[in-house]
Amino acid sequence: MTLIELMLVIAVLGVIVTIAIPSYQNYIDKTNNALAVSQIVTIQSVIERYYLQNQRYPDKLDDIAGSLPDNGVDPWGNKYIYLNIADDWPQSRGPSRKDRNINPINTQYDLYSVGKDGQTKKQVSQKDSLDDVILARDGRFIGLAADF
Image (cartoon, rainbow, N blue to C red; front, top):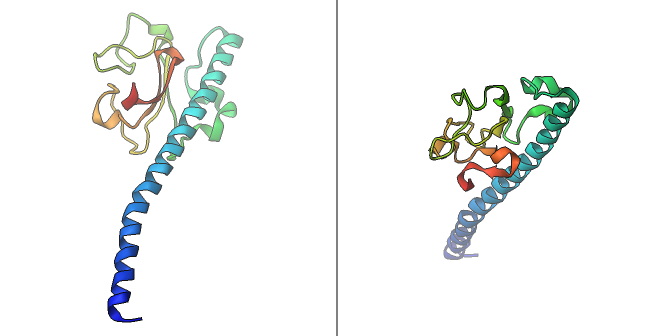
């Protein structure tokens, strides 16, 4: 093999790697997002079962820790965030997550993953929150905050 052929092979491999790595990373991101959605659905079921048995929502996820998938840790290694807002609704809207119009996204509780970047803001339309996987509209939406 000549030096020119070797350089050509290296250049082709470089192009393939440049295309393949972002595609693979996109695949990993979609898989982790789907897993987080699935785990939130499971946690939501556990929370609702707790409500049926106790006539109130848990104060914190630790109250149902034994029933949480992956011990309440999301695919990126962060703990799921849960905030019981049912007792304060509608008087105290302060601690709850908000949509782009600063309206609460839930009335009973907030449940979400801080997503890939590990960052979040109260308002789900802010940049740090766009990769969060959220439960919104009291469970009628579960997915990326960017899609909400």
